[in-house]
Image (cartoon, rainbow, N blue to C red; front, side, top):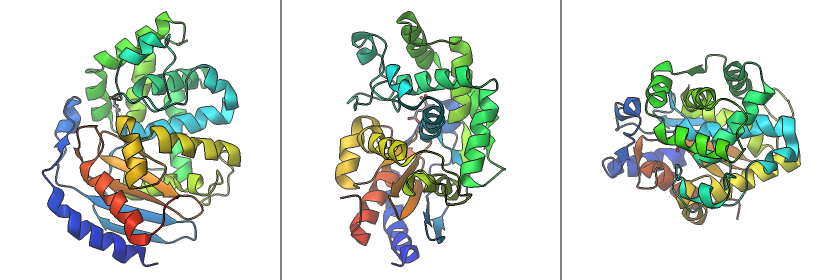
Length: 304
Ligand code: GLU
């Protein structure tokens, strides 16, 4: 399969979709990103790489970081994490407070903001220096020691984090947060502000495509069963209230972020990341969603 040619064709077709979405503006530093950028990168388990467009440009991974923090916590806690957070799709926007009140401070899943904050709270209990640990983990899984926190984005999100603070305090009132909420939000804003390229992200997702074993350094990051579960969560909850539609259209486990990135994979085969900053009304990259639907259709392969 000539993946290079497939993504080149998709890139040429979908460039015309620029202008159909809107860059996230509730985090001011994200609003300044040039909207007309578009990159695709594929890494295969047999060592091939394919890129097109802005695949080497670093962008803010935002909620894609929730996959990494959950993987770290799962390594330490195994099934214990499910006492603190559920694993059902929410059907609500990523930052909704409504369900949390009804459900006694236990977030529906680890990929909505409330769930990710619980996971970050656990990381803070597990590590003395959680920010260093997160960066070290991400650098090691993609084999790139230059991955960094974009301090400007982290600061901008931190000063506009009222809703996430509200989620944190609501959960604390139900006894589901252990650490100081301001400190949790600070770590969370940093993990969301990790800057990576499509190429880095595809490499970082390869261990998921490889059932938990990192093909870059042969480290077993997650057990086969844990990797299966993380993939199932991405399929059912990775795109907020558009998760069902993404599964329907692309048929892949994946995770989006409001920076415009979408990382996904075909188990046993490859990882693919698309970045284009303009978002649709659910907060997912407009062109990213289209690209992955075209990709699995063009190669006649998905998890189904
Ligand atoms: N940092 C963002 C927030 O908490 C992440 C949301 C996202 O990427 O979907 O609002």
